[in-house]
Image (cartoon, rainbow over all chains, first blue to last red; front, side):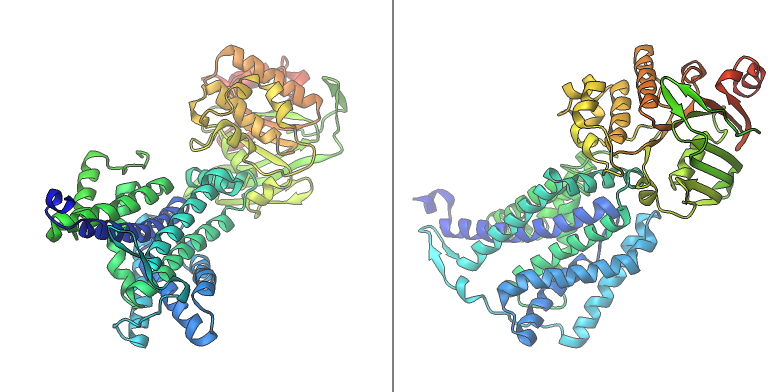
Amino acid sequence: MLTDLLGFPPQVLFGQLLLGLINGAFYAVLSLGLAVIFGLLNIVNFAHGALYMLGAFATLGLTQYLGIGYWGALIFAPLIVGAIGVGLERVLLRRLSGIDHLYGLLLTFGLALVIEGTFVKLFGASGIPYPTPEALQGGVNLGFMFLPFYRGWVVVASLAVCVATWYLFERTKIGAYLRAGTENPRLLQAFGVNVPLLTTLAYGYGVALAAFAGVLAAPITQVNPLMGSNLIIVVFAVVVIGGMGSIMGAVVTGLSMGVIEGLTKVFWPEASSTVIFVVMAIVLVLRPAGLFGKPA
Amino acid sequence: MSDVIENHDIGGQHVSEHIEELRIQDLHAFYGESHALHGIDMKVYQGELVTLLGRNGSGRTTTLRSIMGLIGHRTGSIMLKGEEVIHATPHSIAHLGVGYCPEERGIFSRLSVEENLMLPPRVADGGMSVEELYEMFPNLAERRRSQGTRLSGGEQQMLAMARILRTGANILLLDEITEGLAPVIVDKLGEVLLELKTRGYTVVLVEQNFRFAAPLADRHFVMDHGKIVATIKADELESKQHIFDQYLSV
């Protein structure tokens, strides 16, 4: 019946919707990290894809060398990569504060090349498989589609992290500091808030979000030194659509762009890899600050 | 330039010349290549309200920003409560008990009125409670859920004042708090400053509105071209009127 109406089996539609939702969950977590970083540091963090990849490799390393499984890696990999982010901010990015955004973009782009190049040299360019955790193997037949447990978990975990980040930013004192720091960091510092420390922690948190997405991705995409560079361009398009620095924009746009991409795969597969960029172009023409961004 | 003041009582509050809250010596400040302050010397005693008067560009705002550590390049000495802060960071200066109210008010648009009010961390004991502040500024209580920048100019100024009074800061650096405000709001701010004097706050007030500042201040520092050119005590206003005429008239 539904097949006659749609012209193709509903499983195809729902399957692509689920795939879109999973991709959207990754876009949301990654663009959320970029939004946090851009908000406080005014840096377009091109190293984000490489740090996402580091999250996946940290998961692999923790499991292979320290015997810490997936669930432990879900906690420790973001902490480890977040700490690397803190180091990068203290040693390199801090020197760029107050100067043109372009320098931050160039530095982080260079960092991404160095990190990815090093990992390609060490591990090769092909993917290393990471097993799906035992508890999440298998799936459930929903009638209209088969839902693998792990894919459902990715969506739930991503949404939980997005909601927690939104709560942190919008409902807590530290969130008020972060929002105020986005607007006028010098005045916030004159009120007695240690803004340089806040900035370091914000970068660390943004990077930890990227690493968290990397842990979630490890069993799905295989662990690959270039896994981040393939994703980061789409994520930047998502950030532009949502509005640079907007927390809500990052989450809503990330999820909806994943779904739009999935739907396009059903109706016009050839356009699925470009649809997000078409949306970006339209948004830039009609609303240059993005759907959720505030005009400068 | 004289910086010695007499023991005196103003508004029921005793000003002590024995306790220096702020001492600035040979302060120079620079914006890039531009030399903005050319050797400022001044002392402010506990419980005093002093003004920095002068034309636009005379260096009054730069002096406040230098005290707060908001000017990147400055030399000389700034002692706050006996502590040298010329190389200190703005957040550590604030924690010496200093509250700063910038000229542009600095209300955060992404925060509500109450979030703006609660934002600055406590820097010392004895700050006013939120209830006291809402009693002092009833308009803020009515609009506590509004976005900060939806307030009128006068309400924004009240919010900018209220949020530093909550922190426990007892040295207040206030920059042009009456600028662009209706007379009734200016009167209200005058009442608040008198109240703060009776509570023992030390206030450095940058003002262009001499009529507002004259009845409130214990001393006036007149600035011109990045220097203090005269210090005038409250009881010398008439005898030294010619100095105001010379440096403040347009």
